[in-house]
Image (cartoon, rainbow, N blue to C red; front, top):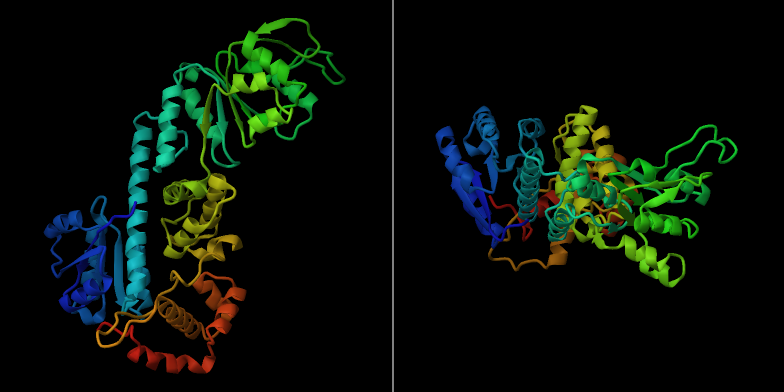
Amino acid sequence: MDKELLQISFLSLDSGLGEAIARALGDGFSLRTNGSSRVDQLQELLSWADVVLLDLRQSAEQAEETGLRLLDDISAQPAHPPILVLCDAENRPLMLRTIEKGATDSIPNPPNILELRLLFRRAYRMSAAERELRHLNALQASGRRLHGLLGSSPAMQELFLMAERIAPCDVNVLVTGETGTGKELLARAIHHGGARGSGPLIAFSCANLPETLVEDELFGHEKGAFTGAFLARQGRVEAANHGTLFLDEIGDLGLGLQPKLLRVLQEKTFERLGSNKTINVDVRLISATNRNLQEMVQQGKFREDLFYRLNVVELRLPPLRERRDDISLLAHHFLQRSVELFHKKARRFSPAMMQALEQYNWPGNVRELENVVQRAVVLSDGHTLEAAQLPATLRSIVTVDEPVARPAVVEAESNVPPMSYEDEIRRFKRNLILRTLREYGWRKAESARALGVARGYLHRLIHQLEIHEEETEISEKEGDTSPLGPVM
């Protein structure tokens, strides 16, 4: 999703700052400074830019209201690129106004080049994910049935192609994959894409149920078949006649029931419990499992003949950690759906929250991601979802190595040797934490929430970086002589 060369349009009357930022960004970025705010020139400018950086500093000789009107003009353009706004660090009300008006993020002046590179890349990725989601929604609206299955990664695109090919062919399908990857959604897509799409789709999970209960659920019973059977009951197999039967967790099906299911597949017949009457059925079977059925066959826990009947075509759903390019796309999809469901104002993810989502390992896969986004939307009050609204397991990922608050900073002076990567990161951490602690009066609980990290982790960082309250004034002076001193 990343581009080799990211094109940045810097809207500012300060061409000197634009040249300094362009030099500091280095390879991978192309920055143009445009001092005009004429609306009739926006289309050409926005069609070139991947990201817009709008200068709203007081020193930029540009009135605040004029800049906000320009932000409104850009936001009104269809499919405009993401907008980052450069503001004076102390002007927090303006920063909040720009976010309300549609800016992706705000950056305090002077900008931190390390952070700026990260924000440009992340803003572009998030914007590209939103465009991809709109494209997929358009495909779905035009008749393509994805049934909630989204993915632009090569693995998912190949899976979609396979599903589309086999859907019209009336063969049994075995869907494999970890819990939460969307196996039932894939089964529904195959059902609706085939000739049986107008027929019933009956789903049943075999997981952790007694064999007698599973038998009754699948095949039904006659009146008086057992104590409490006051009426005859149709089973799932019979209900799926002329349609599709989806059996989830097929690896949990007991050995005693496996021959009866095999008979349904081979002979297309079965009997209800308590009856000798043979019932004919015509069903397509799609089964799913997160277990290795071949190993179970070798261990004598699953019939080999049934395995080969189930596994005419196998489709494997990859876990989310193997298709990280899809995380942003899925997260935006769940955001839109949750906002509509709970009538919230949230419209975007903060960079820190997206960092956590992209780096987390997702043992619960897509289902866990949906729950995390839904939780954040429920807890949100504004337009941006923050890292503080994540569960503790994800908040611990948001480290200050990739900034979650706004440090000051900048470009190395040519007459000072460059710092090592480790020294630069250490200095960056110290400045970020000191700034946040000063802003919140050294109240560590509030500072930790602002940084999006656990309070205990903040205490460890303060100790590791040897930060003391009396150093706050010294750190400001050091910032003027640091190798990464201000650009201006």
